[in-house]
Image (tube, rainbow, N blue to C red):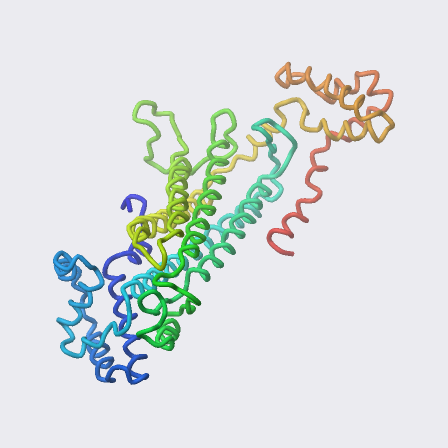
Length: 437
């Protein structure tokens, strides 16, 4: 985790203190259930909760010091609790194994992180929707292969992003549900030394589902899907960021990141206004996606369990969620304050002498009885003259002057094919599909 790209609420989820608090709740709830089953005395569970009710400060340094000797994090934690609770603490962890605590805790942390990320997505969706409706009918040029294609609206560009991030929200909700499982099944997952009712009790208290079969660990396909989902969200962030970066290029300049008072773009060139936020988002997206492959590699553990996944998850759990949280917040700010230039959009749209209307003329010629091959050839030979003139010539006027075209279409019919509004007749339909009626 790099502090520069971290926000406190998400970072707190992965702090040692939060982790140890979750560990305690797992152990205490399990002891409650064991007491109800008559396996341990009720006084043991009461002693744990009475101590906890005093809101003890988690002494991370003390636990670390014990671990330096035991070389085992869960044992170090249990030892520290026992030193504070006293003799009744010996009934903690009855029939449990370390993975019961570690994996269930990780499930809690990942659901906490997912909840924050879902809230982040809601804020981003709100910003995109607001700007989409603001520019619902703002004309701009659509590009394929980076080349002018046909007219769209800037609102449609944002509606597309809204639909994509709506899908991402649905994916994350599903991934959250998939990862939110509890395993309190003991060594190799057979419940030999602990009743399955304990697992059900702990799961209910923590808001988790029971893992149907957990070997000694929760199956890592769940984690792989979670991190893969984060990677997809990161890719969507990059896609929108790259669009902003291209639109901010000097030759285009249809939109740009907000440039705050006092901000500097370059140490050498005072005129620079660079898309630094969206360039940063491209880099952050790469880091989030980088977690997906090791998460998938963690699926193949030896037999009922090994710990090859453990060190990996200590990296990717905090790093991927903290970075994605920061990136979603940054993208929301970019969209919220994005500077949009409709006049420049129209200037660019008109730049190439009407070439963007070529398909309408092509279709009109075919409907007038000209073969598609001849229609294409007639339009293209005039379009290439406009292209080579860098838009100084007018496609409409060249077509009117072309005897083959004029034989099939009247001057008025050609004129009608250069109506910009024609391209926007279904914008309302698309918006209704994306945002609802």
